Each structure stands twice: as structure tokens, then as C-alpha cells.
Length: 238
Length: 238
Image 1 (tube, each protein chain N blue to C red):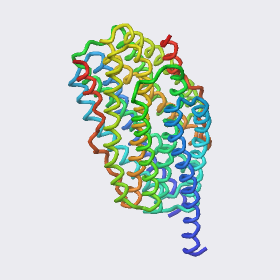
Image 2: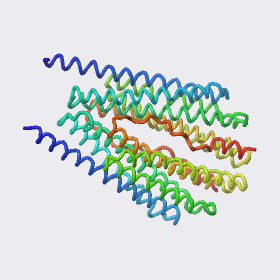
Image 3: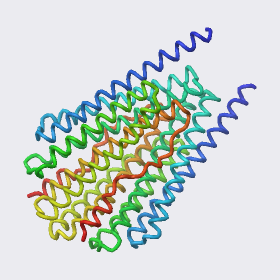
Image 4: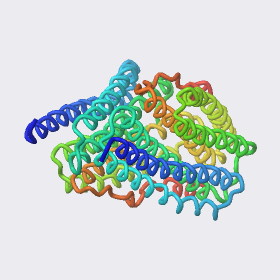
């Protein structure tokens, strides 16, 4: 078997695990969009569908990891080829956790059914959800295109997701302070908002893997953390 | 270079990344213990030390991943050897996130300084923290000993961590309902409790990697989820 054959085999196998990754990405984006709609429309049936659907994403993560392990064993890739395989595995872990967040949002949506929502927050939540969903999609595109510049741009975007979260957090806290009947729903909505914000962190993680795969350097996490709700809590404490 | 040399080289390299993993484990256990003490004693200086210390854990994760990538490239391990390397990489990710949780706990402890705690909850938090800290230590031991039976026992233990969290959650919610001046601290403590509970989930993930490495099967996540605070919120809504 000459080198061309070896290269062709590796490329084919990498294509295969990348295809699984892209499939996971599509399911995660759908789960995030559905979880936002289920929350906004208070659609418990849709929420139940999201909960059940997460297992498919979890199973794809397991399939991808074992396919990648087989690829590593059979092809023994090195340098950039090795980094690409390792990056796909890390991205798969990020996507699997994004799926968990969509599931958690669906669970809390069901738990909230019946309880009145806090006025005006659901549209902000939907906006934030659409924002991080786009981050995930763009982060996967940046990886497929092996584009570290685009990836760096997505990492910078995470600060905006954090800002939307901070605004929402203050709004929840204010409503909970004003009327203790808002406490239960406020806790739910806050959990949901935090889950959405974490999806943005995982999109950032996916983008970091692109930079690692292409450049060989895994950027250290020195992004300024924009979640300043700890201080927000203190302010609201006054 | 004959097979014995290859085996010896692989074992030496695996030992080396395992040593990094064990070092990370020790730092994570210390960070968790310190975060519990900083919370209980309201020790902001200690909390600041934990925040700064997390970077060391993050850096070790990056070192381990690149050493593991080099090992995969140089030694091209297969079968169980390959699974062991992949498992160490996954465990490193779990430990890195546990370090993040300790840092988050420290950040919220600082944010709470000055605000009065909710009576009686801090000792339960410390108990829960010690419980999951032991889970992490035992999960690493089970991996070092390549003991899937011990690993399965740790996975079963996670339900108890979830139960402690559920009890704490109800307690926070009750206090927040009773007196809205408890809302801010209640939100902090709830976040902290959730972070501690998540450390238990990562100890479970470490244990699952041991089963994967030894048996070749990555157990699907079909553990009954014990965090039933969504229903707790509904109950408390009445």
C-alpha cells in the first residue's frame, strides 16, 4: 500500500467522523431552536420531544469517539492530521454537552408549565438562544473550513452572549425581589438563561479547537469573563 | 527497536501523562477542599488563592493533552493501550472542569462577603463538598488500579450527591420564600450547591472512562437523574 493509498484512507475516515460531527451539530442546533420555541410558546409536547431526542446526540458522540479511536489505531496520523482527529473528538464532547443544555431547558420548561412567566423576559431568552445557536453553527463552519480567523471572531462574540445573560439576570432578580411569587419562575428562568449562556461557552470551545487543529496551539482560556452576575447580586443586595 | 523496547517506551510515556493527571487530581481535590473552607469560614483571602490557582490546573490540562497527542503520534498505540490514552485525555477534561467549579465557588464566596449566610446550610454544603471530593479521589484511584468494579460503585454513589443537593435546594427556596432578603444569598448558595453537585457528575464521568478503558465499552448515560429540583420548584410553588 503506497503513501497515496494511506492518505486517501485517512481522508476518507476523517470525512466519516466529520460527517458524524456535522450530523450532531445539526441535531444540536435544532434542539436549541426547539427548546427556545418550547419555552416561548410553553409547548410541553415539544419539550418532551427534545428530552427524548437528546439520547440520539449522546449516542452519536459515543459512535464518533469509537470511530475516531479506530482511525487513530489504524492510520496512526501525526502532526496536523492527528490534531484534526483530536479536535473532532473534543468538538463532539462540546456538542454533546450543548445537547444536554437543550434537554435541561426543556425539562425546566415542562416544570414551569402552569406557572406564569415573567413579563418580557421570554423574548430576550429567545434572542439569546438564537445568538448562541448561530455561534455553534458558525464555529462548526469555521472548523470545516479550517479557518482560525473566523474561529477567533466567534470567540470574541461570546462576550455579547454573556452581556445578554447579565441583563436577563438583573431582570430576574429585580422581579424576584419585587414579588416573591416570582421566585420559583425566576429560579427556573435563571437556570435556563445560564444554560443558554453556557452553550456560547461551548461554541467558544469548538472555535478554540479549530485554532488548535490548524495552528497546533491550543489557546489558553484568558478571555475576560463577562458573567459579572456575582457583582450584580451584590449591587442588587443594596 | 524490538517490541520490548516499544512496549517499554509506551509504558513510560503513559506513566508520564498519568503522573500529570494525578497531579491535576491532587490540585483539584485541594481546590475543592479549600473552596468549601473559604465558604464556611467566609475566608475571602483563601477564595482569592483558589481563583488564582485554577490557571495551574488549566495549564496542566493543556500540557497533558499535547503530551498525549505526541504519545499517540510516536507510539501509535492500539486496542487497550489506545483506550487508556484517550481515557486519560477525557479524565483531564473532567478534572479541568472540576477546577472551574472550585473557582466559581470561590468567586461567589467573595461576592457574598458581608451578606449574612442562611443558617444551617453551610455545614450541609461542606458535607456535600467533602462527599464529591472523595468521589473524585476514588474515581482516579479506580482508574489507576484499572478497576471497573470500583468505578461502577462510584457511579452508583452519584445519586447520593444529587440527593444532598435536592435537600439543600428545598432549604434555600424555603428561606427565599420566607424572607426576600434571603434571595440574593439564596441565589449564590444555590449556584454553589449546583457547582458542587456537578463535580459529582464529573467524578462519574471519570469512573465511566475507567470502564471504557478496561472493557472497551463506554457506558451510555442511562443513570436515573436524581436532580429533581424542577419538581421541587413546582411543589414549592403551591
